[in-house]
Picture 1 (tube, helix red, strand yellow):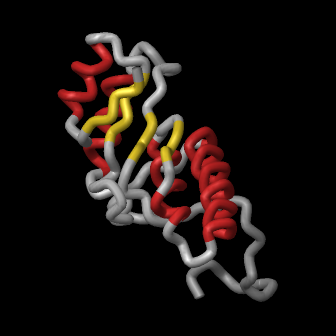
Picture 2 (picture 1 turned 180 degrees about the horizontal axis):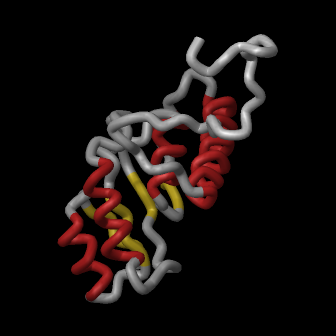
Length: 143
């Protein structure tokens, strides 16, 4: 049984414990197109359900409105995204379906690649050591 649920981590964990083959937390209200309203809860659900069982399927369902929502769900670690309204009600459904496909691939690849940690302060990505000096020949370091 694939259990549709809210984004409540406790409910999702209990559904798995009672034998649900998969848990499908909502990104937002069905058909709303609001995207993932509570990414923190989805992260907690993924942590709870995949801890010790990385193959347990978590499928985000409901509220997806566009490709970036799909990519975001996969970047968080979701195994799938169930879609309907975002494609069926798009101005160009075929084009939207293609965008969703690309978002799926991009989001999953980003998750598997592993994002850099978010930090309050930036750090240089290029080393300062070993860089060829641009100072004119003979200029001192104090000039």
